Length: 116
Image (cartoon, rainbow, N blue to C red; front, side, top):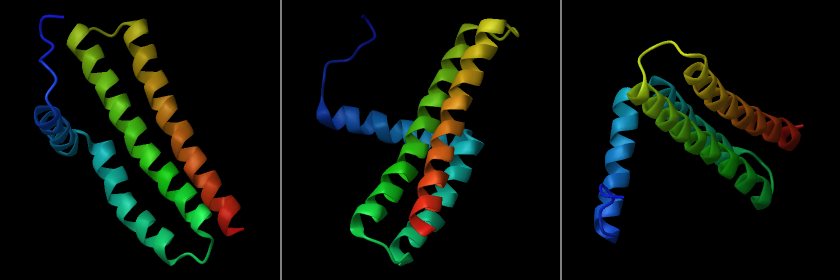
């Protein structure tokens, strides 16, 4: 690939931070999930359960953010390829949204099982 830069740990870290900043500025769903994560982390700290259960809740909560970032990347690539309403573009975006929905559902199910 011609646009692939040479590997550099510090530059790659900067690219990751740039991506996070872009997501916070442009993706309302990510901002909402990041805001909710503040309360989720507080809940994890204060819930009376084992360390293992707390780690499960933390990991599934972070997984929601990760999948949302991947979904946003998919949506950006689809928008770059076409601005038309195309069935394949819609499918790609819908499938990415489904991944986010499944991840949020997994997180909620973990909370339900751990609390009750």
